[in-house]
Length: 122
Image 1: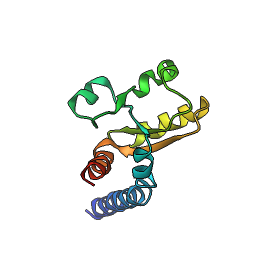
Image 2: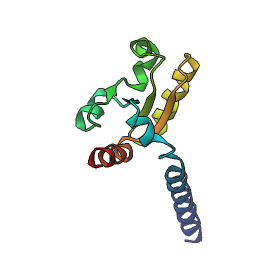
Image 3: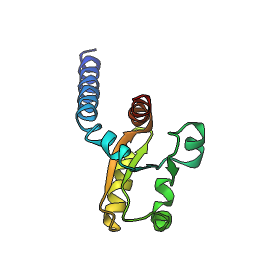
């Protein structure tokens, strides 16, 4: 029983750390970048994208980014997003390796959408 409590405490600690990290880093100037024309790049699968996405975002999945990155303009700013923020980090790094200079991780699309909606409301 003691082991279950320890595992539970570790899981809770990891979750709190993750949420704190996301809160501290997610809105790292993303609203300003969006206002200045950054393109939201949703890297989830087409099926996931069709189930819900940010209006105006484009969809190129992590699985196809190595072939489709040529569709993107290296001079533009991109904010990558996915369901939880893990795939978007991978795509951010892939694009930077391909020579893109202005790529930023936007984390989970549902969190990024809140920033976009807030900008539209103002």
